[in-house]
Length: 355
Image 1 (cartoon, rainbow, N blue to C red):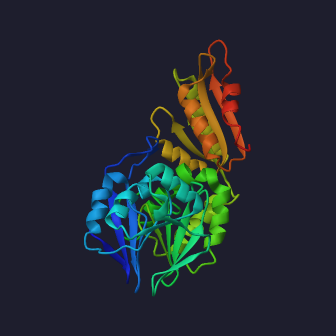
Image 2: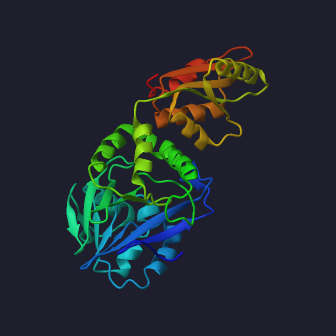
Image 3: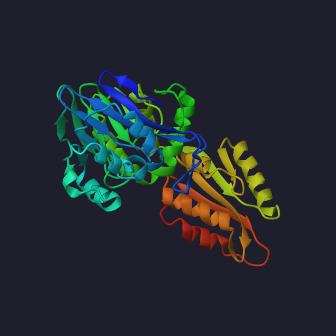
């Protein structure tokens, strides 16, 4: 895909990854993803904000073919899907200075072997002038790594947010057009990647909000020309508000646990409680993570396998514990033939849930 204009002096680069279906050998990508980079040309200097996954480096470099000079290369995040092409960009532009947070500098040196003298650290709130355009750097630690930051283009009100507000969603749309589809993709992204850092994200939201942000340009997914759409969604997701809903992942080996689950689902529905039911043999764990964002209650259904819970339940319980959603209650149901410690072992798997 060719460069596209966001506003005067700002172009969108990068690549759409239509066929990728798994991230980090862990996270399902049912809608593919994208790796967005942004070229900002001021009256005096030019900056490239983020790069692309190494698998798509050729596309990014092709888009830069007619760009004679890059003065600053901004690394908002050191993870390879955004930083992996940095060495090739620095090789192409030997005069470019790489800008990163102090923690980001250490990571870029260690992970990509970038020479230290090619990196300049920027302080929280520091600005860099490109002439008629000004970049302001906002440190946003733990969104979702310790070194992350956002870059704010003051004159145009554009927040280049990298993973913050992102969505794994492959599309030719430059801006968000199908709000329902992007909302689900962004919520999945938040649930799988950002939710463990909910309290840090809440603080970073407070940092972003005083700026006059008109547009949010993330490094995954389409651009939000209505910034309030995604900011209000994040405000809801990181709040302490929960819904009277139940997330019920389960496995049944011979039907008895499923019989219990079906009875419980019906009883809860009669009482007006919404249930999100997931058969762990076939379920998309991303959907399970999405359901955990808002729910008040987790109920785990498991048969007994060699005294303990089914292996799939081990994984689901560990996942829930790692994501640390704002649950209020947890319960365990299941069945066994001669002896069981499933309840004790599932309980031991979720010590970080404040339930």
